[in-house]
Amino acid sequence: MQSLTDLLNSQPAWHWWAFGAILLALEIISTTQYLLWPGIAALIVGALRFFDPGLDGRFCVFLFAVFSVAATIARKRSPWAKNDHTPHPTLNRKTDQYVGRLVKAAGDFTGGRGAVLVDDSRWNAQVIDGSAPITGDMLVVEAAEGTLLKVKLAPGAILFNT
Image (cartoon, rainbow, N blue to C red; front, side, top):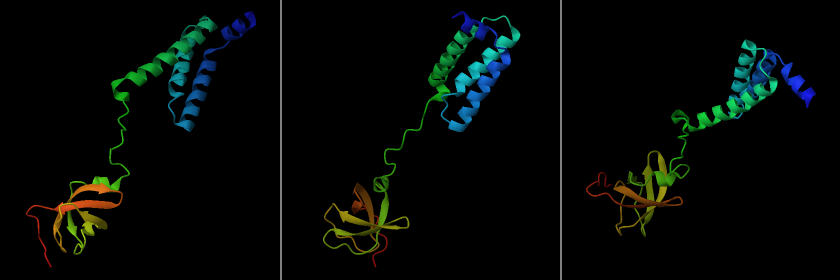
């Protein structure tokens, strides 16, 4: 135990700085933010050791541990560290994103089924209100089931009956 204490007491400040630099370099490579705060803590302990060379090595290790944990917890709980990357509820569900949109019938509907134009895409659709839209009628997407859009006539929005 005494040899370990002697080894820790003999470490100059630049050893802590080198350790911090290694941790920060590994952080840059990994981009995980797991090593960022321990790397900064090692640099701080190195600065303390530089200004007080008689600082006990065991106390430096203790300070490193305390600074690492405290900085990590402070970063996780800080208001600017909140992870607001909550995915949109319709992310990767393209048809769900069309619910509520006004679309145009691409052709005459037969048997309650037909095609609609949404932006520059053609989608299969099924009417849910029992109507029989014809080409150019404006429809509202009420729901989506897989790649099938459930539509109904838009009130007063019949524009191009051809």
